[in-house]
Length: 232
Image 1 (spheres, rainbow, N blue to C red):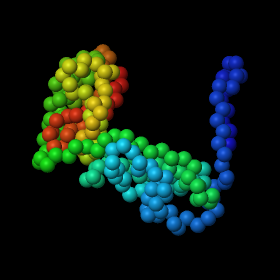
Image 2: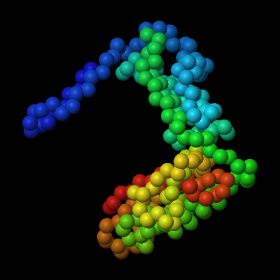
Image 3: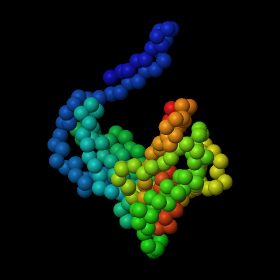
């Protein structure tokens, strides 16, 4: 299959992409594509040979893609206690008819989080701490009329994840564009929030903010966030 993109005015080719396929159906039995098979195949590729000693991977999900006649095997990374990493894991594609791996993506670079023996804070306490942090940093998060904006917890379920810590909640940070990873991970509650306009008479422009605050499950302190801002 070939995809060709042309400039409408000059008729010049601006992009061409070609992929090679072999039909929609695998040519051999698929009964052995089990969890044990996926882990054995992964071990054979030596993707566990990474600097930070032990790496834990969740049970694989195996999906067949009829367009490419291949299987997509995904193994999410977890910490030692089964909490999934937000952005680490392994994906590989397997052509079963020809019995070869056609591509592999292994992202295992984040360090294992430091787990304390302290008491885990409640979700309610974590949510309250997150909201307090949001309200304290309105001037950083909102570019327009922060005094007329308010955060509220969404009804989406709170997840427990492993994420990379950032400097987002550092009082010295004055711009969201200066947010950086701190090079260490934490086990967190991922708590989603939205924003609303509090002044019904306001007619000017403002920014809607959607943010998931990451709160350390042991200390109860926000350690990062995933956010999206839209101007209205």
